[in-house]
Length: 441
Image (cartoon, rainbow, N blue to C red; front, side):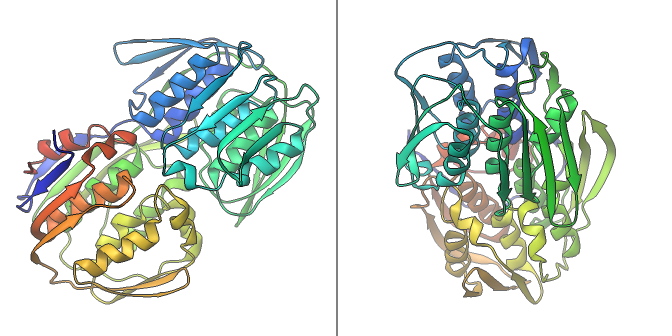
């Protein structure tokens, strides 16, 4: 079967309710933490994407058993020292930076060598961000010039560290937190604001973690080598996956959508803040707390008068995975939208800042770039009639889905390659598209 999709018609007006797959960030963290717990953990609505399946395969190689019963995964954790001795382990993280970086943190006390590999996209990303601080715990780590493959053999003589994370990377912060779980004494972390799912999960598990927040940084302290019990967790919907349907609805004609039970953690809330500032009026309904996370239904409708935005740079970390579809909204806005300090976009699965601007230019949207600061010159009357071919984007799942949203709302005839890339994070993407009335081949 040809690995591409053809879209030749815009989506017709719709009024629907949908549910989104489980949050990828939380799913991977739940799998890894369940492997460290004592007893049988139950995880419901686990995202069954390639990234999460690779996390399950990784703990299996390390001696942790699991099974699926209906919509539940049961993982039999053996405690903080529960990984079984084995030689010549190779863990393939596929496309997942979250899995690769976090599991390295859990291996700082594992005395046998483990090799971490990934796909072509992951292998070009910077792993010195985690390997350097993890070395200071006492682990033995080597890599290919700071990139995959990474080879780690842990130490029984770990020491706590003081660590400053100044990028705003939840993966780097969480890798160090996971290493601290294995280390005697108190590890202290000063971390630039980023996703805080790891901290919330550890607090919910009653681990000795303290968090002091201020405007730009969080101060985190964790006492290590404290075992914890198994847990049950129902993974809420992923706001990154929801973002494609939020923007699809905003850019479509006369449409309304409710997305049920979505994680709206403040550290992931950037897209809603940005879009609402652009006059998109996304409404949170049935808002509630679930084990420290905030969950809500999202109501959105089509918008005729989208406003441009001067986006504050301190919103970047809470919207980092959603900027591609935010760029589509800016393309339809009245006026010039500006975004600053977006260099981190080029350190994702693909150079998303470069690809996003090239994409906008290809559909007739003017952009201006100075370093990692950009301006997007919106066109409220944007309508496309030409033919467009989207390929050579390093099989980045978010580039593919962003292209589908553009095709279904801006018009034109589109040939979009690498449709199987959605399996990385959102295997149900096409099924939900069909549910709301999208037509494609």
